[in-house]
Image (cartoon, rainbow, N blue to C red; front, top):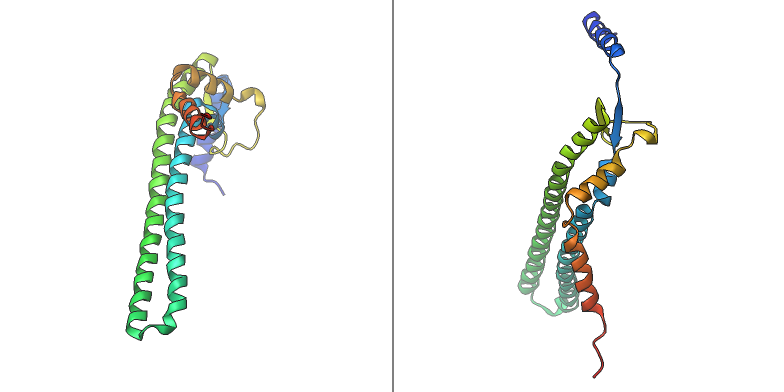
Length: 192
């Protein structure tokens, strides 16, 4: 049961809000992140880095598997001391590979957080400008606010994306240039 003081505070809040016009809006920051040019470029950059590091780990893991298969085949012909030493070396390599994978995962998560923070920091003042221009009392984040329903007319995400891209016009250049470079790398060499 609610206490009397909290009921009084709530009722006073609602009575004071009844005299003021409340205008609300919301943004979907995750959708905006995926649609702004800088967000797309960051996502592509992070994916390239992850793919490169994952390929390196996969190669090391495959080498470890191959070495274990060779050891399994040859272990019957080895002295027990040599066999134990080789298995210990493989276990050490497996442990190091596991540590490397965990470190890579943590580094990638940190890199993603850093990229997102830069973009979200730029979005905050844009949201404030839109809210002020539209005379909004409050703007909610669609996912994190617990918003269950709101009409699409209150969604400011498209305006956020348009304004963000207009304010940051050169942030997608790296993505476009990378795609051009990738196309050059995969294009067949001219015949001589």
